[in-house]
Image (cartoon, rainbow, N blue to C red):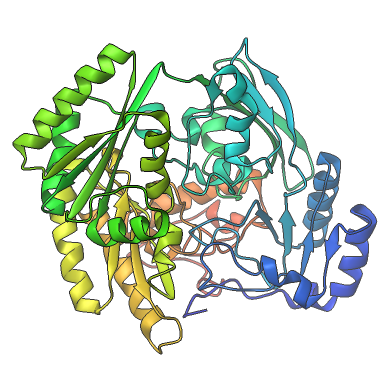
Length: 498
C-alpha cells in the first residue's frame, strides 16, 4: 500500500476467524455477513483506491440492536471495527483492517421523520445526502450541505467526516446542520445526543461526534435541520486571465461584505475537463473560472450581481455571465460537481487532496502549487470551495507507471504542508483518515495529539474503533494516562508505533 503502515493484525483474532464469522452470523443472520474473498472485494477500499485491504469479514446490520450486539461482541473479543457508509471517503477513512470487522451501514436507508413545522428530518445513516433534499423538495425545503458526491454519499458518512459542499460558505458544514444523533458505543450501549431542540445544555458532545471519523462510535440515526429554499438564486460565471486574478476576486467579494450562497473556483484544466464531460456552457478561453451563487429576494440578488460584476471588472475579468433560468443555474453547478469524475477521462488515476487556507493566501498558494507540479512532473487540476479557502487539488498520475504513486503522494504532502505553513489546516471536509495521518505532527505537537487521544479513550478504551486512522502514533490508553514527553523522547519505547 505504497509504504502506508497500519497496525499489525492480531494473530489471536486471525486464528479464530471461522469462529468469529459463525458468531457474527448468529447476530446478523441471512446475508448479513460476507466472508468470501471475492465478495469482500467491493469493500477493500473507499474513494482512495490507492490503499486496499480485505477485512476479516463484512457485516451488514439492519437494526440498531444488531449494531449494538456486534460492537459488544467485538469489544469482548478484542476485534477492531471499521464503520463504513457508501465508501466515498477521500481520506482512506473506511480502509479495512485484516483482523477487523468492516461494519457496512448501507441497510440503514430510511427517512424516519419529516417535521416541516420544526424544520427537521430524522434519517438513518445510510440515507444519501441528496435523498434528504429530495424527500422535502415538494414543500420547498432542502438540506444545505451538498458535497460533490451527494448523489451517493450518506448522511452518516457526512457526520463522520464533517462534510461541506459548494454551499457551505453561507450555510455551514455538516456540524452546523446536525441537531442530534443516536450512536452505539463500542460497549454496545446506545446513546442519544441532541435532538430536534435548538441546543443542549452541558458539554458540546454533538460537536465532538461530528467529524470524529468513526473513532468514537457508530451513528445509527441523524437529526438534521432543513431550510426553506431562497426566493431567488442565480449563479454567475466569471472568467479570468489567471488563477491569481480569480483568487484576488474571491477575497475582494468577501471583503466587500458579500456572502454568496456558494463561490467555487476552477482552473483551465478543470474547466476543459468538466465542459468536455458535461457541456455546462463554460467559457474555454479563460485560465480560471469562478462560479458565484447569490440568493435571497430577487431585488437583492440583482443588486449583488451588479456589485460582483463591478468587483470582477476592476480585477480584469474576461467574461461574466449570469444564469437566466433555474435550469441554467443547475447546469452551471452540474459542471462543478462533475469535476472529479471528469478528470477520470483525462488521467488513469488521480489523488484528490483537501486542505484549507486563509483566503488572502490563495494567490501565493496557487503560484507555489504550479511550481510543485513542474518539480514532480505531474499535472494538477485545481477546483475548490474558494469562498472558505477549502482547496481540492487533483494530482494526476498513472498507477501502472513505477514510482508515480509515490511522486503523487509526495506532491500531495507538500501541498498540505504548504496549507499549514500559510496559516491553514490539513483538511477542510474530507477528514484525516490515513491520507493525512502522518502529517498531523506538522499541525499538532505530541502533547496536542495525546490530549486528542485521551478523548478517544473516554469512548473507546481499547482503541478498537477504526484504529490506524487520524493519529500517527499508536498509544495505549493506560500509557496516555501518565504520558510525559521529556527531551523529545517518549516513554514505553517497546509499544508498537506506526
